[in-house]
Length: 390
Figure 1 (cartoon, rainbow, N blue to C red):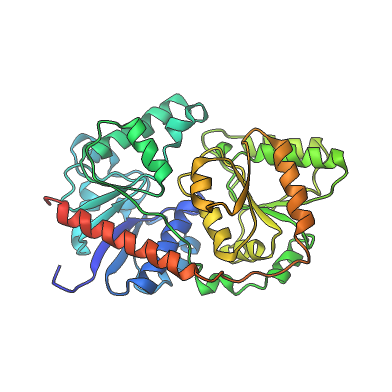
Figure 2: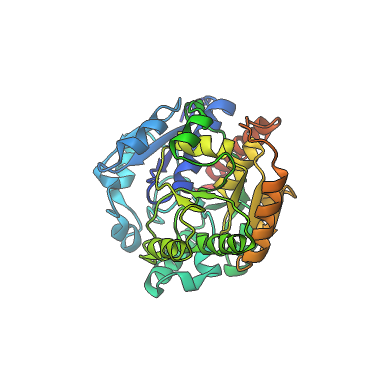
């Protein structure tokens, strides 16, 4: 790397269908770096040859981002060599061919012998906080992956002080340098072109509705929302929750059908409406027009949906997690993850207090948070490079 040149940093593609939060995280990071740290970091996104063009095209449209599709990143190819021999040779060869300076390592381990400075991102420690949600083999495989990466001695990046406390609790012997980088979202202008009123009408939603844009993973806890709607129906209060996102949880197949079965059995089909996977432009349109955002999750590292709601000043009703309180900074209403009655109370109050429907724009001061995110990320990368013996 020549003096003054951009740092070429390798990222691996996170399919939106598999993990929408991770996909959105990287998209927002790339946009923030382009806007607030232009010319400092050049993201190079490596994807498999089976990468979905619908996923990759919006990222490729972000200025400064380079997309590389290679068989070395298809599936879990190279993982066995990374574990047994300490190096995913295929990935390392691609990094060398594309003149990579550093690697951002998330959900993919390239081996402790990887000859590049690297930052390890642990979004959360859900398998330790909620072990009952993981099959035994999946939990131990994830834990082994975490421990192997920690043992590599590389810089660890976390998204919240809550996650930092978890890291110190679960891995007290870890000597890694740890950096907390709180992310903030910056929606691409391309995602804000859809007319919210048109999108609301397209999905036949009422003027007032609450939005729950969480994937149907078990820990996302949609059940407590269904229980709250049941209570509201018994009170004779009519409100609608609109949900969107993937319906597949590979750890507990059938969870979506189980929840939607409850919706049907309780006669809540007009109160709990699931739209499936929808375009990101529609997600932002529904967020901007909704009465409030709900996040009932049992575990979060730093919620993408909460960040997106903060960006537009959307009222938030959140599960009472330490990280939600850290993230919302007193601007939300909270309920216990197994307390549908309190959630029902909040839904009634926010709905009654909401006034006429409105379309929200980005809040003042939003740029400051996004700029800080980009600066902290760049600083973490620079530190990791300076501290690396590679």
